[in-house]
Length: 94
Image 1 (tube, one colour):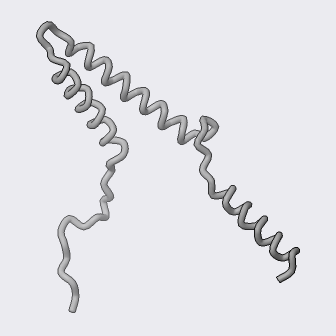
Image 2 (tube, helix red, strand yellow; image 1 turned 90 degrees about the horizontal axis):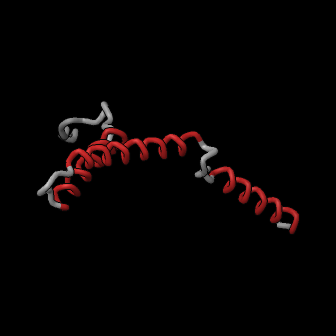
Image 3 (tube, one colour; image 1 turned 135 degrees about the vertical axis):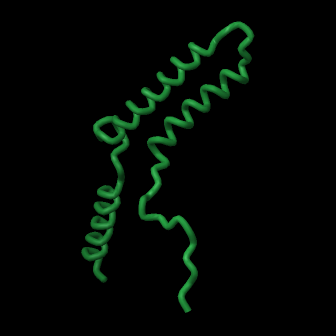
């Protein structure tokens, strides 16, 4: 293999790696949407926490409530189950 061929191979692999890199700044609409959803969830949790603050409320109960709100909202977004997943194990065929 000559030096020219090896330099072409290295340039090609570098270009492929650059194309595979995902854009993770705000110019990517998916990234922007994820930040907006995170802000919406955080605001919902804070609003709920403010309503839970009463005399006698413990920090533990407030933290538990806030975590429950965040967990339930995130689960709605990121734990979508596939409708094609089998609900029971099938026995293997002989």
